[in-house]
Length: 111
Image: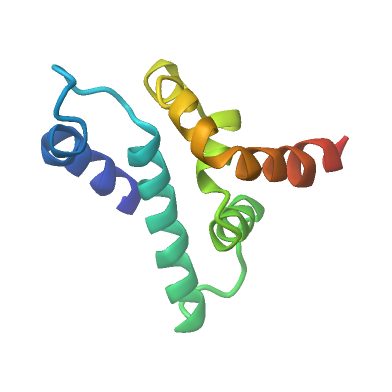
């Protein structure tokens, strides 16, 4: 539910503010990364408060990626769609090290 609320705020208000030169809404890297990071933060808080006893492995991985600052790299390589892919060149230019770390630590390490 928290993921959906974050995404809805992007579709209704945040996208136009973050991307003033784009004429229509599209799913963006910032939107997806923020939504997933918010979920990770909420789950961490609920773990701390004892509301969650056992984590689903996917949520465990999401928290780990968030803690390591690799949510965006994960989104680009594992969850990208046409809108998100449009953000790849700019992210790659500024964050090549994060993309490389994600590939080495999560993609190649699991082969």
